[in-house]
Length: 96
Image (cartoon, rainbow, N blue to C red; front, side, top):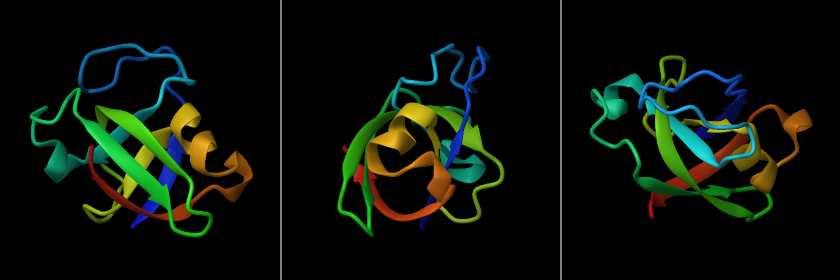
């Protein structure tokens, strides 16, 4: 799958919490989000190119994520595994 990133912008995610952009967060596909069943669970994300990993908390849904293997990360989570200039990186992930 692939990771992209989003800015929190002072808005609450679908899980109902407002976090700053540095907080490591993840948004799941709308289908996997499933009405919030996974809110607060942790996900370990690995950048396949450089091997860097980050653990992030489920805080939102991602209607633009095309497969269950793709995630949308907060700026803080994305920067832990890649440069924002990369825009999108190939990842693997597991529940942490």
